Length: 409
Image (cartoon, rainbow, N blue to C red; front, side):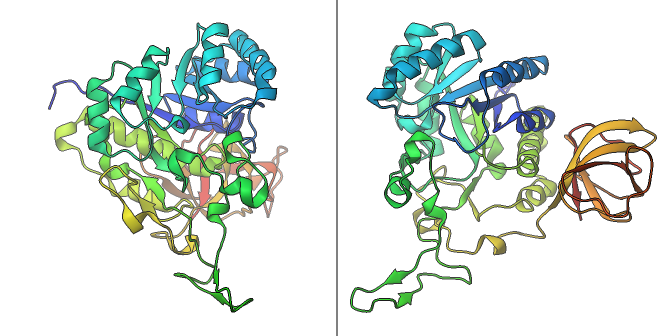
């Protein structure tokens, strides 16, 4: 084991400005986000040009990098629009732009040579010679295909001069590195152009040709059959292996996920990475990390292809509601401002009443449990029932910070 371990970057999704703030608050080193055009998550909110400028200023204030996605596979009629888009992005200057289409890479090299190019997982990079090829094209980082094992990744990183990035947590597409046609066929929405309707997560049954309208279950539960529905990836038990594989950046999936999910996942991986780098010889996976990741909404977890071919173990045939080890967090809201004397302005997302048992998720340490001592409006008048989409003053006997997440026990 080397004396000094190289700490990988923790890369988090940011579907909008609120999610950006949460990712930064809970310890992301970098975020990836999309503009209003040419992103593979057109339904995640995304950023206008002005919002992108604000996002970059905010991130840089906290020493966090911003990577902009432009990872669609473009068509002929879009080439002029892409040129205009890249010219605009050149003025905004994110730290890198994530691309999959070779044609867009060609134009980016011409128009924005001062901005690093990161290659999307959509490009299906599976070997070190492919990495060499992309390096020769000016790419600075490769997001490797999800189909690779940890040993294959080690081989690539040992022979690559440029940075590598891999997904470590979140949903996995049922198609090769996310290049899926299923959505286009079933709903007319092209997943390779940011419009995926996620039909792999719909419920299915089988009907025999000579028996119309008679539906037969295939490993069915009470909600249906998840024939194409892969499990979620979770690598929290394998932080040492990921670090020693030489991966430059560990990426969390989920630009369309909520801030409750994002806070839990970013915090957990941040704590685990830091703990291993600080004390590798005494490192162990903490029970609180498992608890945190199992109490957010997720499909059954697996390790993908990292440790061998998953065979049928990666297919999700269970009702998502029955996959969790323990009760799912009931998200209440986030702290907006500390008003002193243990009074905090809170953005309420779900019902809350005085006396409720809650827990606070802060960037460091396990979630802390406490009780709501008071709920008042801005005038100090008591509120008996806090309703969603309101802002109120909450009294709790803990020291907490802006953007800390509040959940009901």
